[in-house]
Length: 98
Image (cartoon, rainbow, N blue to C red; front, top):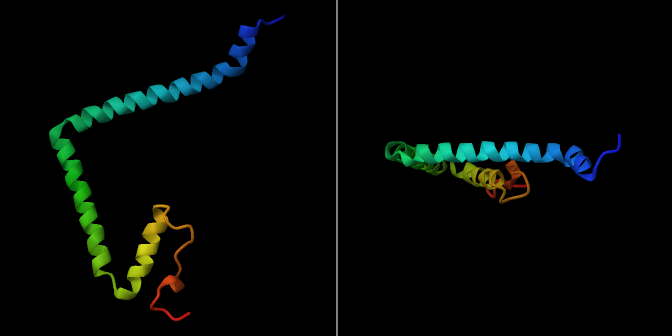
């Protein structure tokens, strides 16, 4: 019943390496799939155009927002991207009296 050192290592660390190997295989397969998709000029152009349309849409939302809501919108975007630690509140608006 005595186990060798290699059997103990396989028993203790084998599952960890199997999980790491699984995620590595999934990652490499997804990267290869993404490279094939982005290699197609039509799809790459479509994704680029979609990104530009979304950007223009958000610029329009910000530009057409009422003046008193722009500051709060900016703070919410900063918080969403992790640039601001505190949550935006109604009182963050400089036009509102505290």
